[in-house]
Every structure is written in structure tokens, then in C-alpha cells.
Amino acid sequence: MQAVATYMAVSFSGPIFSKMGIVGKDLHKKDSSEIPEAMGLVAGLVLLAFLPRDSTLFLTLVGLWIGALDDILDIRWRYKLLFSALAYLFLMAEKNTSVNLFGHLIDLHLFYHVYMILWCIWCGNAINIYAGINGIEVGQTLVIAVGLLFFTEATDALISYIFVAGALLIHNWYPASVFVGDSWCYLSGMFFVAVARHETEQLAIIMWPQVLNTLISIPELTGYKECPRHRMPKYDSKTDTLYHSGKGTLINIILWALGPMHEKKLCQLLLAMQVSGIGLAFLI
Ligand code: UD1
Ligand code: MG
Image (cartoon, rainbow, N blue to C red; front, side, top):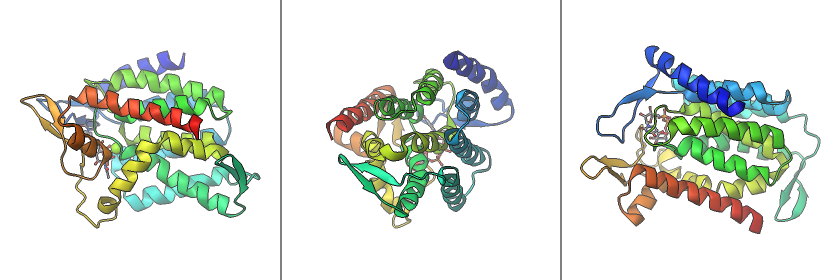
């Protein structure tokens, strides 16, 4: 039901978004064709309709708003950080301030709130900067959600999310017919924090590629090194492959180590790495 609704809503809204000028250039294609952007907004609205009316819904809604504003108005980083932190207000009522770390229940007391605010800020941003090739934005979130099924109790919400993400991935898979936009990235980040709550250790392990990518990105994100608008790999139209652009991202490092790769194959490899995170979360 969720999948059919999402698939149809995106098929229907794509041309409308294009008409409104909400489009993006597919930079890793020969003709850099323009396709609808911000489809996460449409998929997100479908998801919200299926979520139980609790704090998870509110947090996801704030994520969707931040992403949608970013897609449409390109809001500044400082506002995104501020709004992400404010989203935590919906989880503030939480009385249980302990987290499960390495098999031990540790009560963080007041620090728990600081810790969770940092998660609210990091999670969506980490997904948004591990991006730039067809299928990776929504593909990574689909794998993370499947992983969380094993470690949290929010099964109904996760299943709705998985169906919505799956349908969106069909549209975004190489060669993409739509982009999911920042709306999908920020919505997903908030949703994962709301779902994981006291199981953030497992979430962090499943998200090891995003953790690594964030660490590699620090020099450019902090302005220590030049940070251009796009840090994605470069496209070689002669061989139809991607190669590293020298910018500090995990994707570039992989391409540097393994050599040029086709966009679809690269996405499959990145998703396989993400799946390994689920296995790792079981081991640790
Ligand atoms: C983030 C990254 C940026 C990366 C971009 C790509 C940081 C700090 N920012 O920026 O380096 O280049 O995501 O998503 O790391 N696009 C494609 N193919 C895709 C996906 C996106 O060509 O498969 C292009 C399209 O032109 C699309 C645009 O990227 O319109 C979307 O970029 P956007 O999500 O707005 O970039 P940011 O999130 O600001
Ligand atoms: Mg983005």
C-alpha cells in the first residue's frame, strides 16, 4: 500500500515539479539531462500519512521541513543546524536517559539530551553529504532502515518507511528519473534518530560509511580546505565511468583505490558496504 502510493505519487508529481522548475541536472550523464528534484518531499508526505501519531512523526516532519526549505530556498547551514537541534524538543519528554553502549546500560543523565541533539544534527547531514550518484541517497537509507528492524521496536514505522523508500528507489535507481533531494536526506536522519533512541550504538555501527565519510569531510566542511558546491566524483563520458575528483569524500577515496567505475556498479558497491554495517552491528 505504502509502496504503491509512493510510486504513484512520485510518478504523478515528477512532471508537475518539472513544470514548476524544481529540477536538477544529472551530472554523470552524457547530456546532463534535467530531471525532477526534491521527490523526497512527495515520498515523505506519503510516509507521514502512515506513521503512528507520536514523537517519531513530529521529528520526521521537522526533518522534512528542513530538507524542503533547503531544496527550494537553499537555506544556510547555520539554520539547518539550529532547526535540527530544535527538533529534539519533541523527544525532550523522554524520562529514560540511558543508552546501550557495548552491552552496558549507561545512564548519561543530562548529557543524554546533548548527545541526542548531536544525533539530530549529524544524522540527516551525514546522509546528505554521502551523495551525488544515482540511487545512493535513498539506497543507503533503505539499508539503514532494514538494519534498524533488527535492533529497535518501532517495527510498524520502519516497515512503512522501507516500502516508501523502496518505491522511491525504483525512480532514483540508475538511470535516475527523479532526484530525492535534501528533503529525503533530512527526513530520514530525523526518522532514524526517533526510531533508534536508546539503540544509537547500533545505528552508528550500521552507519559506519556515513561516519567515515563525515570524518573524511571535516577539513572541507570546516573551511580548512576549499569546499566547492559539489564534491562528487568526475564523469568520463568516453568510458561512461566515474573517477575521483580529489575532494575529501569516501566515494572519491573508493574510486581512487579501485579505479574508475560505472555509476550503477559504484552504487551497488556502496550499498553492499552499508549492508556490512548491519552484520557488524550484530557482532559488536
Ligand atoms: C551535497 C554534497 C555535495 C554533493 C551533493 C550531491 C557536501 C558538503 N555536499 O550537497 O558535495 O555534490 O550533495 O548530491 O558534501 N546530483 C546528480 N546525481 C545524483 C544526485 C545528485 O547529478 O545522483 C546533482 C544534481 O545536479 C542535483 C544535485 O546534485 O540537482 C543535488 O545536490 P544537493 O542535494 O542540492 O546538494 P547538497 O545536498 O547541497
Ligand atoms: Mg543533498
